[in-house]
Length: 306
Image 1 (cartoon, rainbow, N blue to C red):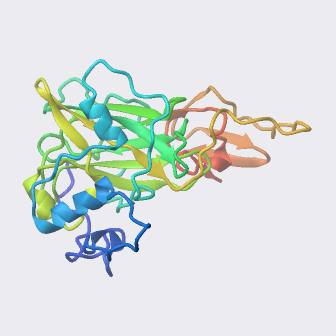
Image 2 (cartoon, rainbow, N blue to C red; image 1 turned 90 degrees about the vertical axis):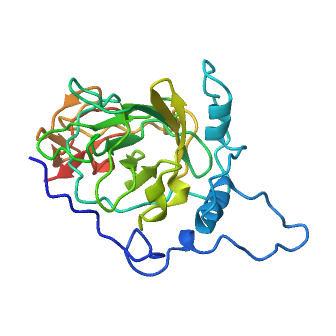
């Protein structure tokens, strides 16, 4: 059953979309004091996007970032192994969850199922730590409206989670979400590095008329989107507020014994499954395949302690 079409809590223009009150520094004027001689820095892509949106100008074609470098590289070329991530804007902004999130989404990168209609969309990119190290094993949980602007609250249509690979990359296959009252087009996502806090945010589409009237819209969360045959291709790179660790790490010296319990890596757990780990009991809240680093106490998005 489709729930009533109410929007996420609205906030006044200029308000912080994360709290609905006050002033969000990311939405203040893009004009900044002239830097002192010798301290000049390149204008970041996201700052320039904010300035363009604030001025009501058409979004410029920018270069110099990982995502845009990929977009302009042409099809058939692989992603660079260790791209630069920082353009001066710090971690990806958070946004409100909204009323349509559901836990226990299926593990899948392709949200298109039989009967799904709409414009095909793929979204790919990296997840970095703030020190520009690509992060492996990051949980990314996506959910969105269908082509008619409705969210499936009875099942899991257009919902799914995945994990970044060893290079920190992800790939999503879905459709362009439809419009519904009060909102511009957007994708919802939760991102969580192993043992770290959850980032909840939204991704936006450039050139949408409603971007200028949606009080939650944040230009720093714009994807780079281009046409691809009868569909669209988008790119976006997340930066989480954690320090990345290159490589698999090193064992302690002397080695430590692993905690006991019934939890084990490499097992497909379903929502509701119960395990023990290091003397405590946990219940699975989201289906997933376990892996080293995602032990129950490290991932509250997957396990709830009982």
